Structure formats: structure tokens, C-alpha cells
Image 1 (cartoon, rainbow, N blue to C red):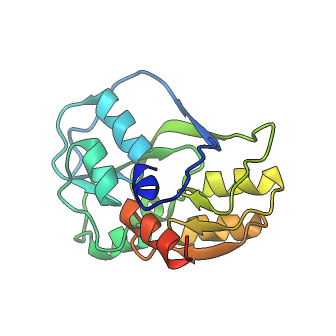
Image 2: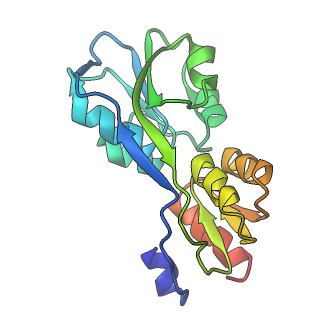
Length: 193
């Protein structure tokens, strides 16, 4: 948000999602060749509950890697497809740490064991925000914005978020070319915002 303010935008915060951790029990990561995290929330939650040390960590993007405390592999394209393309094969024993309802592409392709660490609740504010542009960083936020019923066009962090937004009736003006904060800011700038 601060970067947008620094660029001269008036930023309005309207929470569209709430994250709920699922459980307190430790997650033993020893014995896995790779631990895969695909979101900042998943990385933080795994770090909080982790027992043992992972052999290698793959994170879907730089922010996810930073939230975990580093990663051995961060793909050039921050999507599950991008991570799959760069993960060495055979990957061995893999732990996929994520959210309830998360895409299972990576887990299925790698035959990974899955640990569900959190759930995302979509929020619908009592009143639609007054805004010229929404910045969407997740499919959950895109669906929640669509439920508000306000005709606010948006920029999206990536293809999954854009697809969810379109299904929810949200017009996407631009999609981040890099699926991170820098990409989102560039997408805002690209639409003249």
C-alpha cells in the first residue's frame, strides 16, 4: 500500500479475506526431500509449527520465500506451473504445505503429501468501498470483491486471480507480469493509475 501512496495514489484498505490457522500441532518436515510452500500465509504458518529442518524448500515466489525464511528454489515464474517447470525430477518425497481448497496441481503432479495449515474466509464488507481501482492479490479476494456487487475494475497478481475475478464478474484491466508486489504496482501504473 505504501508504494502506491508514494506514487501519488490515495489507498483505501478494504479487507476481503481473513486467514484462519488450522491447528497447533507440530508439522515434522524431516524426511522430505522437498517442502513446497505456495503462499505467504502457508510459509508463515509452516514456519510457526515446523518441527525439524527441511532438506530443501521450494517457494512459489520471493515474498513466500522471505516469509519462510529463505528457499532453495524460487521459480522465475511465480505460479505452480512455474515451480513445476523448475523443480528437479525426480523430486523424491515432497511435502506440500498450503491452504484448504488450494489448487492441487503441484501436489498431484509430484505425488506430494499435503498438510493443510490454514483456511481463507472471504469477507463481504457492509458497504462497498469507494474506489476507482481494486488491487487483487488472491482468488479469494477476487471472489469476495465480486460478491460486493460494486463495479470496481481491478488489477490482478496473476492468472488464477484473474480467472477467479472474471468468473465473479470483476473486470480485470491488467495482470501483473511478475506475480509479486512489484508486478502489482507495475500493473497499477500500466492502467494509468
